Amino acid sequence: MKNDLTTKFWIITSSIIAISLTRFLPHPPNFTALGAMALFGGAIYTDNWKRFLIPILALFLSDLVLNNVFLSQWYEGFVWVTPGAGYLYGAMVATIALGQFMIKELKTTNIALAAVISSVLFFLVTNFGVWAGGAMYPKTGAGLIMAYEAGLPFLLNTLAGNILFSAVLFGGYAFAQNRATAAH
Image (cartoon, rainbow, N blue to C red; front, side, top):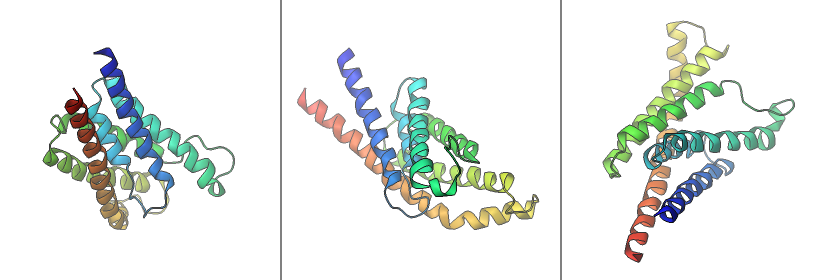
């Protein structure tokens, strides 16, 4: 039994690590696996420390590579955390919790609904962060609305990425479970 749990842990963790690497591939803005990765970790891990730590650690490590290798021309020196990352990480923690509470059963409707809600959540939190933390928009209600309007084109890419990568992660997991069950 212990060996089965260890194998399951490494399959889940490897899936999260592998999907986080898609951030290094060319993609349209916001068409990433981040939301799906958070939903998957939230839904599949049974221990809270794994549920939250592993997806956030995968995000952090991929951020380090992105910021210090791929985007290094935008920064001076080594970058541990990008400005405004608190909003991104906050949205990810909320998405992990969403996966934990919304995807108690691995049903397509639960996963799809969680992917849609997490996309909207990410949009609301990160665009609020752009408004609150930057100088691009006036600190008024109208400025906040402008920030959300400017972010609308990215919402569709976020939604498409969450749906596609959720299908890959949850579908791959279901396939692996079915294969393991058939082997016993």
